[in-house]
Length: 268
Image 1 (cartoon, rainbow, N blue to C red):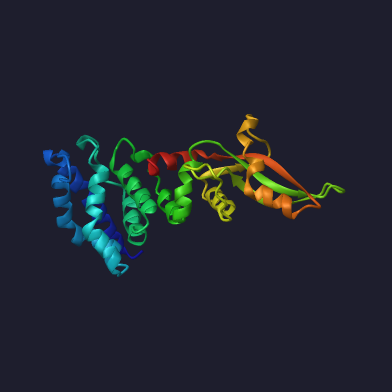
Image 2: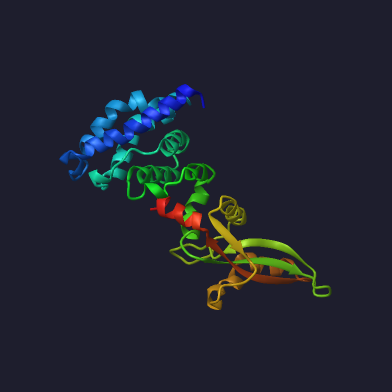
């Protein structure tokens, strides 16, 4: 990034922190209802000069410009309105700058926009800023909306998972059929959801350092795998591969410490 752009990022970052910190001293910030108080009014005055050039002018498209002029201020104000004024701080350039730039591309995707805004919020609060890692911006950039919707579930607890292997009954040699299958189902009906992209979604979360994949041993509670033989993937495999044994290998997905930190900051 050229030096002049770095200066714009630095200026915008300082403006976000100082404006919200100053506005936080005003009682209007805490007013109820749709009144977002002096925070919105003050940020708006500086938005075109300091924030807009980073996200919209540099990339030159109207949708980003519209978001930053109409919605961004309100989004930031809503996110930060419950932070006590004494805890507000200037966000780090390494987080606020890339977040603002990334929002220019992702603001239309609700789940990704919320992740970026939560990260920006964490960086503005001195109680949480130490956990707001600069790498989180890059991680969000490498998530599809579909993956972002699943990541909260997969970072919550250890997730029982299975892989399916085809075993030759004569030689006991095996080959991998499917892996990274977990009990993905409709929360209202309980019916399993079959998504051929799930294995690669899990692999991507593993690549990003958010979860670990373990098939060397199962979780201790065997009841956690009651769903395995009912999965459509297993039923279909047994039907297709009648001359081979379809073996279920039990394992689990576990959040890494880095993934737990990501969840705490970004998935609040």
